[in-house]
Length: 336
Ligand code: ATP
Ligand code: MG
Image (cartoon, rainbow, N blue to C red; front, side, top):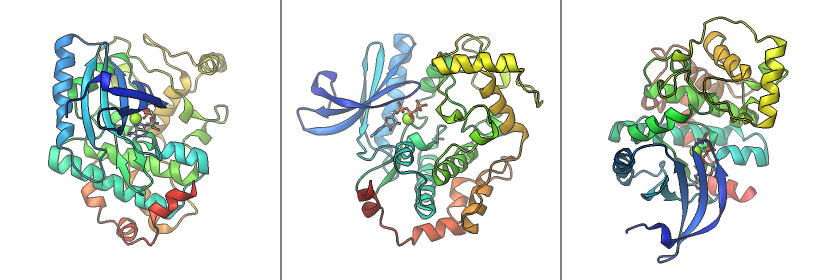
């Protein structure tokens, strides 16, 4: 049906991200509950219309591992994207509420994400580009689905002009400005799985004076606005130079005030984190079943040529085991 903003009644806010906010709404004429994502876009009318056209591909994305799409429309200066409402929210919210997630459930998450990525790529040639716990959603039927994938090249472009986003799930090759591939999503999956299993972002402990980098919501901006889709243009040096104490405390102060840094500045801690991802060994799971650890290791191979595709990883032993798991996710959903 035809979606109009007037027909949507706001219920409450579900969350806020870098690009905008998400609200739970009711489509009054049909009584349908939806999630409405409002994205502020700094683009000309022709570009907005192009984005809207590109978003229509989401109507064809039909998989039980992908959030379904109700429609999108312009509500100047925003673009509104209406999607299936997932009543248990995203996996970051779940672990922040209940603590580290059982490793066997994490295996089922890995399976669902790989299925979703394989569907998007094999059927639509879409690369997700933003795999992280907040983009993996869960509902009380026990379903796990992906949202916020990169369907619209124009949308990716328009958002990248104003911010690059929290970059912490980015693969080493992406940080270094190489071409994005489905394997970059596999890296992001590996980081996300460790986060779910530990109940915290895996890199944060390496920064003793910066307790929780995953909460950092600052902005990385290009030196020349609009000129970048990767961080290579920032001149990220392949060195391990540390920020001076003074620079660091300045950055920390900015961070604690929640100021977003526009126009070429960025905090040292994010720069350090990016250097760490490029230069240091990848994080690992330890103290978990061997099959889980080996799977995560294979997601986090630093060389993308060695890393497998989502489709190949569906044949992994741990993933095959997750397929036959006796855990009932619908029942698990009733525990929180
Ligand atoms: P970023 O902007 O960096 O991608 P994010 O994914 O947290 O971060 P949004 O995509 O704006 O930001 O989403 C905000 C929050 O809204 C999410 O964390 C999630 O909990 C919630 N949310 C998003 N889509 C849905 C949905 N379809 N159903 C239920 N909750 C949702
Ligand atoms: Mg999101």
